[in-house]
Length: 339
Ligand SMILES: [Zn+2]
Ligand SMILES: [Zn+2]
Image 1 (cartoon, protein in one colour):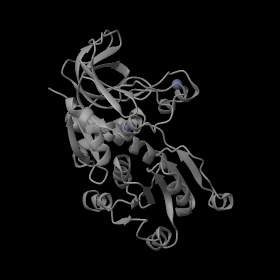
Image 2 (cartoon, helix red, strand yellow; image 1 turned 135 degrees about the vertical axis):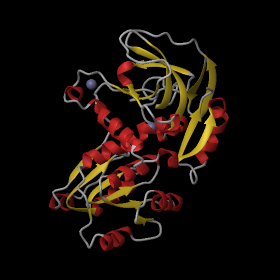
Image 3 (cartoon, rainbow, N blue to C red; image 1 turned 90 degrees about the vertical axis):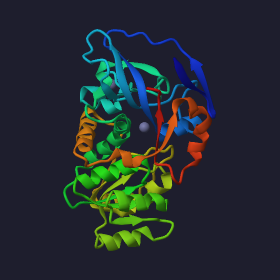
């Protein structure tokens, strides 16, 4: 079988591998679709910290069950996705059910080899079945679950004003789930294409491009001077994050889904007088996956709207650079495997 290895930043090679063997508790999957994520682009560019090479990338999976090892209850042909955050089950986070931030976490396709290969084996416990969903939809569940998790942490009430920074693939999912929660969503992004996508496809009334408008002034106008009950960052941009503390209402909550490497600066009196909360949102939990699947089944979220590019697995090596540069038009690119 074929696999695509990222040998070193900027370099992919197709290799031939032995078919993996199926041990007890493991399931052999045939890949059908794979979403390409910001993490994959950063790993390829070499800007992902603590990344080790060579590595097989890919964690946004739609696959077909080929064979289930002893103790695994799946039928051949079942279409599934996986929760790619393999956890230890023993650490302080796992013991409180927060396996998404396990101390010893191994993310499939990040810390261990992932799914840019024709067949993979994963623990049966990682499999999420998505009966009734298409392979394209299944590949979008994981990135959508990231947004759903962040929105869940915000504990929104109907009518709360939420500012979402960044309308990339993760941001768009976050926007969709905040909207489903009944919040009044305001989207900030520098890309007008993405802002029009938010107004046209996601029904967002207020979008702001900070390159063209004074955000603070605009926000104050929209919220009658109260500002945002919740700010969710999906940019992972230090400047955007530091700036956005000013957008918080008194009693507000700031949630960071995006990740960056720098030090965040908070003006203490400003933060203090608001009795504000700052929290990070990492990966997602099983209930987030279930919620996303439920929303897709009900037609509340339409993953197909996010898919703008599709590349056959055999052409990923030659087309990856092109995808990296397709920033303006790209929302989500999927890799298709032969059936
Ligand atoms: Zn991802
Ligand atoms: Zn753990």
